[in-house]
Length: 190
Image 1: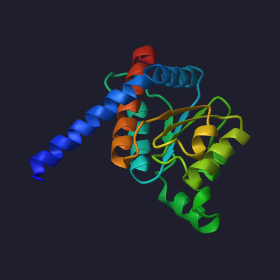
Image 2: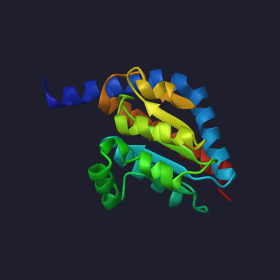
Image 3: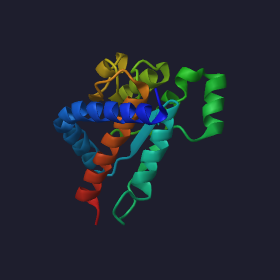
């Protein structure tokens, strides 16, 4: 297959996945309302994920703190993926499955929102983070793929992209999150 044909096929697949994901519009709007409510009440958005999803966590926290489209006040958001000293100490001393849970225990408070990104829904460190949040009465949502994995049943709300292709799932997670931050800015920017 020629490179141009591979690109055309990939974009067509992305378009099909995006069209199928559009069916999640009502659930995505409900998720946006959770973000809006959290921020309106003075809570903080905490993001976590592994690999490409860790990069998305950082990207998204930045959209809230700095800006997305509108010049506005900063919104409280933190990526739990950025402190290498903390991540390596927790990984070494407590085990990698505790790198996010330990931060949730230290930083999250009732009224905050923990946002997890996982293409599989089975990452032990995200499962542990969800459990740690539950123990602190912190709301948890997740952006998932495939069948949602174990996380689907451990969170208050999950958006499951209808795909088993990791790259397509991540692309749609970012698209959904951008739509949510756009909604948040529309409601809270002043």
